[in-house]
Image (tube, rainbow, N blue to C red; front, side, top):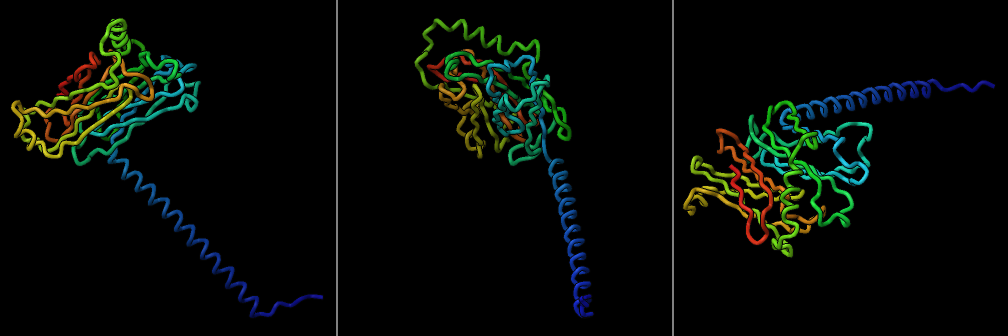
Length: 287
């Protein structure tokens, strides 16, 4: 027996199928249009991003005993802190690239060549076992080479003497009584502005043993009015007991000062030294 479908139902089915087709096509167009817009937005955002590519040489990393690599940096007035588990690294590769991104322009400084920056990396293993040792690390300072293309900088490259120099200072102080019981370390950063008395706003940052602190000085002029030598200074207090080990004499520290008003020569300037004492601030002029 053949079941006949009434014409009106048949017409309804055709209309339903046609409407569904239109909906699917329209919905697909919306999805693709959204994807295209997202891609365009990403490209537009990337144009305003400053990129520093830190290349870590794995040949000089103790892959067996290291649990993670801590990367710290100060770029264009912004601070970075990132932990990279060794388990996430492809052991067949000779290096790992760490992409550090920030805005080309912020409310303090707009990146340009040859602004200075630094990147440091620490090999962190058994923290409890190695707590009082000098954590193996490497640091590198550089100048921005471009604001539209990544600036590359190498860490743990063959021939680097950064750790060896710190180790020599650390070793020569092992038997001294250099306030070994102190639980704090102070770092005083100086920013002489005799040549930049018109500076309105700046940021000062300091880093020691994978820990980083920074402060924005909103009204530089107010502080300069009280200064006898046209110098802005900030003292940062760090706990010696960090999550990657105890800060020791010989540990290297970095400091940067950034402001658009510092040009020329650079919108950000950086310097470095090693910790020499715990009983009083370790001083460093950062420009």
